[in-house]
Image (cartoon, protein in one colour):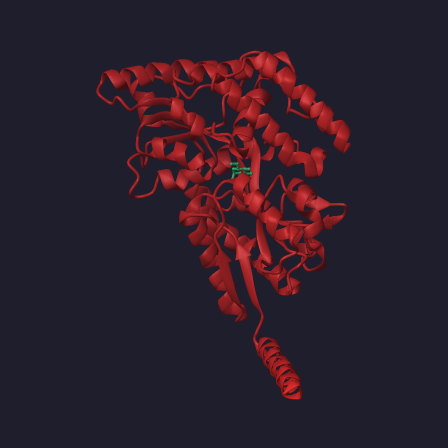
Length: 431
Ligand code: GLC
């Protein structure tokens, strides 16, 4: 009896072994498959799916497109989990411009597959941003800079021009908001932007502060600079907008929520990224043909126009089973033709210099030409200098700014406390 039990157990193991080998054999015989995590919703996801499908057809490689959360902060948390577990499930990741330093240890050096004949066509600053300890850990896919959208029809109606300074924006927004409300649109808002507690608020607040001459929170030498009078003045002004020219609800707005209000015709001004242009001018948009775009306003004293540098890159996971194929998919998706298609269809800013001289692109998105300098000189978040600590620095910053905007804290003491916190962090982590 005992012998019989042992025998069946052995037989079972053997059968399992064979079955396992069978599975392995079947797997080995199967052609390679890739998975890419890109796009979150709407046209962003569709465009990625279309680009991937075109590469798939030409190479015969099946690719699964995995949608990601829309918020950069949530996407970061998800990718961190996947990469920390060394999972091979996703080959290609769409990463934010502020992440190369953090994720570099998990990413393939793409310079093994994509040579300088290709990378030289891109903005050198972006290739530099994505090069960590000599390794090219991601290819620039599209770039971003914050811009000001305005209702050209409303400015004309009230004899106003696009504002040069934030103070002018405040006055114009208030005036048109009041007049439009009196004329019957009770929902009209003066200005909408991103003030929810997440990475988007870091981008908006950096623009206010930098445009007031208040620096970039941490400077390029790693010194914490946030506790200064210009930064306080910028945030005092921004806090005064809430409940005046901006709704209380803006404290919970991300890019899409602001776009929803602006695009439905209920805001005079909006701060957003270039992608909002083609959606605002789409056939079904109530404000089609009524939108103007300019550089964001500057502070009145010591001010300059500023727009935060954003943008997304494509990177190959070090745990991918097919790094060469995955790198080829990245090469294709970031190529001239593919970036051109994306710029025309959805106003995604190209990362290849020559595309800013391409007539089809300039016709589809005229402000790529007029605001070229804003894109070239966009202000970077302090991600390079703070390296793997960037997410913490940004979170401390947007928590503090959110408390100031919602009236919980005064700007001066809040920035002083933030300064102390960041200095302690910088010492501990030695950036
Ligand atoms: C945009 C930018 C990105 C930024 C994010 C914040 O997607 O391209 O760099 O982090 O907005 O919400």
